[in-house]
Length: 120
Image (cartoon, rainbow, N blue to C red; front, side, top):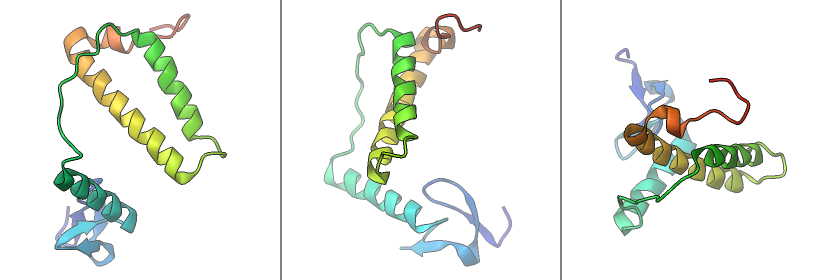
């Protein structure tokens, strides 16, 4: 990063300082990132965002991958509003976090198992 660039506080994208959206001495690459970052701060301050450890019980990881794929296809549908796509993307990020944590415990070969008939 040069002296003329900054990293977006939300997505870490590198942006020219002259093009950055600056709010309360924090730089963002665009207004959407600024707004999303501020929503996250508001949620944390209100106590709506909290860390939790959750036991999933038994999970059919192959089925979960297929369900995630359905959500991905829905998010790509032209019939979805921007808000609905944002909600689906949030759910996908949440599922990714669960899968990553499970893969650390169970191994990637279990959590990210191939679809039936798919080669590894």
